[in-house]
Length: 231
Image (cartoon, rainbow, N blue to C red):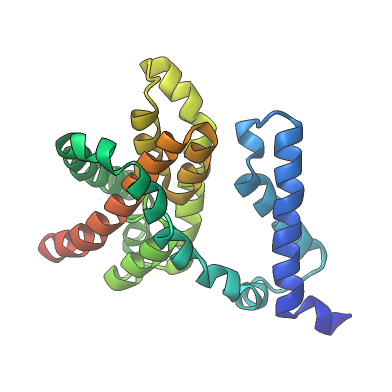
């Protein structure tokens, strides 16, 4: 039994089972934001790992095959982008400006807040890429001297906050345009936000995918270069 609990088969099966169960619950309860499969699934997996007394590092290593597919899944977002290409071309300038300003704000807001709260230099560096999708964020964090575990946690928390509060924020701002709705989610809440955007509409999902990809690429270049001049 112990060998089974510490095997890749168990880890992958647990993750899939938790996702399927949380997805069913999410649909059954009419999609409340706080029970999004990303949130509920993570809670179920964490509860199982804690209850069964499984070492997290071991579990993470056993489930590494799922982590590997984050990269190809991100690349696959090119498909909805291509489908909305004519619409994206007409908004090229606003998109570029928004990515540049939004990417800078997402990075600096986290850095200033962490520094103000007394975070160590390593913690601050780990939070610079908190609004970038996980595979890119971890690469950025490691290149600037941050901790990948802290970065991954910050990325997940940022995505969760984004999907929980997006409806409220958009309602307050009076935003109903799916293009703006999706782009804001992709820029601030990365892959988790993109999954939520596709639930709204294909257009929102496509623009969220675009924001996710552009913000990731922009941050991968901007953050390391900026830190070279600041240090």
